[in-house]
Length: 205
Image 1 (cartoon, helix red, strand yellow):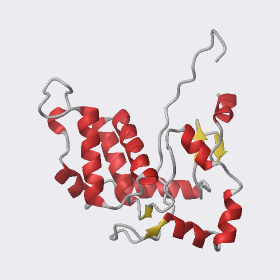
Image 2 (spheres, one colour; image 1 turned 135 degrees about the horizontal axis):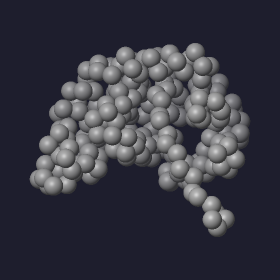
Image 3 (cartoon, helix red, strand yellow; image 1 turned 120 degrees about the horizontal axis):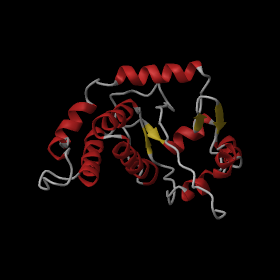
Image 4 (cartoon, one colour; image 1 turned 180 degrees about the vertical axis):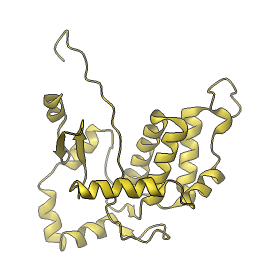
């Protein structure tokens, strides 16, 4: 960065998006991502052609994702969207962003399904212990005594709290013509499609 220039600072508000909204919510996973993509692009040939048009592996490495697990388990993501929203409301944006980072590794690298609710409850609880503190450390954070247990998180995942807000967000995206991700809407004015390079955002700001 040139001298005497202030670093860019901005906040990202994540909006839920369903890649496969028809997936059964009651099943931990449906198929591998490899199987999903081959079907989506009409077979191996179509899939291989599509891969030539982007550099998602390189972008992922830039973002701290060492590799993408092609055989990661795909599933309905309603419960995980509800969970991230709930954690944000209860503990703040910083904690929900930390959980989002954990789930990126959990899914894209480790290959676990986002609707494997017992496993999701465990990694979320572990994240809360790290980000908020533990009940044994009374001075660490004022939210210590409110850390959700694995059982609490699993009960939340198996419920319906927050579903209305997720449905409303999905409806709004559909009305805006958003049918794929990633997509960035900047200050309600500029829409950036695809995995845009960081220089694109620097030029805008």
